[in-house]
Amino acid sequence: MQKTVAIGSLTLKNRVFLAPMAGITNLPMRLMAREQGAALTFTEMVSVNGLTREGKKSFELLKSTPADRPLGMQLFGDDAQLLAEAARLVEGYGELIDINMGCPVRKVVGTGAGSALLKDPLKVADIVRCVRRATKLPFTVKIRTGWVCGDDAFLEIGRIAQEEGCDAVTLHPRSRAQMFEGRADWSRIAELKRALDIPVIGSGDLFNADDVAAMLKETGCDAVMVARGAMGNPWIFRDALALLAGGEASAPGARERLAVCRRHLALFSELEGERIALMEMRKHLSWYAKGLPGAAQFRAAINRIEDCAELVRAMEEFFHG
Image 1 (cartoon, rainbow, N blue to C red):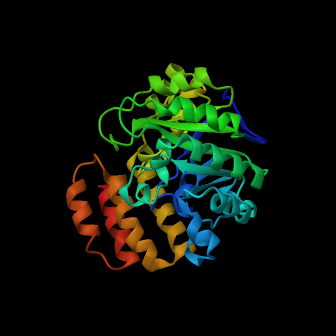
Image 2: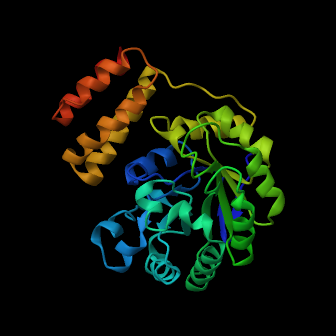
């Protein structure tokens, strides 16, 4: 039987989540993951500067529907007071607040946010303390192992997060210097799990259902957060849950692939309009087609298409073969 997991006052129906990804985990993507079984999804990273300055675009990233709940809202910034104010502002938009302390992208770390925070444990303590006082929602942080390989800041940061009131910690076991290169060292997740009393969520190199089951078994983590492995592959949630329940994973056939692609396009069209749907689905269809015969030609063809009806015809031809 599939285990539930509690993060603060929030009890989730299973242990498989969709990670926050900038430019990717918008509402249509989250709904696709939900329909395949993800118990919790996260918004894209939302800037606290945008939220506190009444930035309409920042609040649009929090757009949701009843089918998209419970929702984790990921915030980024480096100022404790602004993060606390942002936490107050978003309380009514979702069920959980996460602070990004792991993003390695230069644009983010250059502002002192993301994984740059791992270099300053005192600032992390101040941020967690202030945000915890500002909200009663379940509250988590997402971190990496450290700024560079070998500094192992994650253990100290994890203990600080726990002591200052976090309800869970997510660890992507790469340093900032590694970016997304090499292999994620899952043993670090097991280390953090042994060091903390609050739930630990594992992330990194989860590309199929076997990876999800293996991480849970090898590390003892309380839940997993799937990122790149969900791109063009919402079935990873269904298959992982099947494995964890003692069943088997089942690869989608051509008919199911086409149905899911059409569903994704329909959600985009309904929620964002046909023009945005067309532009966004070009990249998503490239991921859906990955590894299939003729994928390169399909990608080239859809990037020239300027009409949703034509895009559907191209999908039908490719996925039906």
